[in-house]
Image (tube, rainbow, N blue to C red; front, side, top):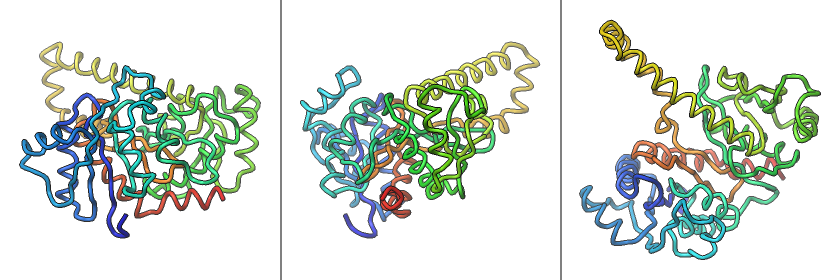
Length: 334
């Protein structure tokens, strides 16, 4: 890896819109930023055809041949073991070998979670690597950690998640001294299950985080905390509920605005400000969910990621390297 160049492996075969949208996003980033080098992983001939459709690749775009593809239907652990030449495994391997600083994929979440720690490798001192997406709130965004990687996390793991999440929010999002909240069923310390009750005093005593106590799910959307910490089962339920309710509300608003003439007229008047307000709820605007605590950066984008989300995810990788996030996490856990 060159000092002033951010090298990024991008899974060209991951997601519902691969390889077309993936290649478009990668080419856009490569054209705008000459301080990056992009390696597209996947079957060489398939990627070459896609690059030709888009007018060819620039000097800072290369292909790493990976003839196999892991689908969402395959058991993740078996797929990682058996398909060593898949676009996901090959991409993760570039982090382990030091060829790349980061890996971006819209592919199988299970395979990426299963392979990241084993193939890419964890930082020294990291017990578990959480998946931590940014989710929109009334006041901006908060980092939800963990939302899918560790359903059997222990109290010590959650404290590490809080430390890593705080470093990410401060250095990538720019939130100074981010507020850390422990996801709970009530604000009182005595509430919660055994894991939450054990974790609460450990977080309160931790000097490396700005712990504000427990936060309820309804308060997350209000922006009660900048980093929301939980084990993956609760985090995934929160995230999926968040997405589901958001989709229903948007759908019902559209239906209501287009059902009558006066509704259509009103919709025309508020279309521009409403579109601006809803922009923050679009996944493509804030990129992908990082897996924290690895030797490099692994970003998981939505399965239906468009070129815009891939583009923004690649920009995340640049900031991650420039801000030395891995080194700062390593120092915090030393």
